[in-house]
Length: 92
Image (cartoon, rainbow, N blue to C red):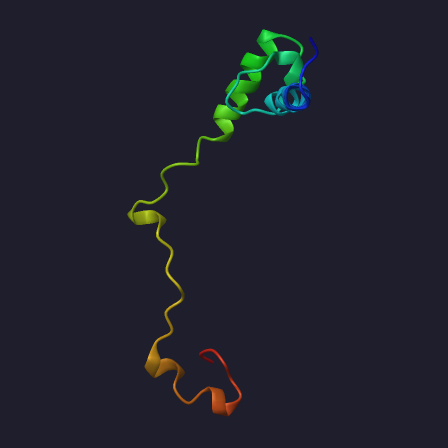
C-alpha cells in the first residue's frame, strides 16, 4: 500500500532537514572536529595550534587592578581660565 500525501511530505521534509543539519554541524563550535577539517595535518599540529591559541588569549583576563585605571587629563582651573579668549587653548 502506498504512503499518504502527508507521509510523503513529512519524509521529504525530514530528508531535506537531515542534509541541512549535517552541513550546519560542520560549522558547529560545540563538537570537536578532526584536524583535517580545521586545516591542520595531524594531531600534533592540532596540539601546537591549541597551545598558540592559549598563548594568544593570555591577556584577555585581568588588567583591572589599581595601576590599570586610566584617567582623563585633568586641567587645573586657575591655569586655564580666560585663556581661550586670548587666542590660546591649553595653558600657554
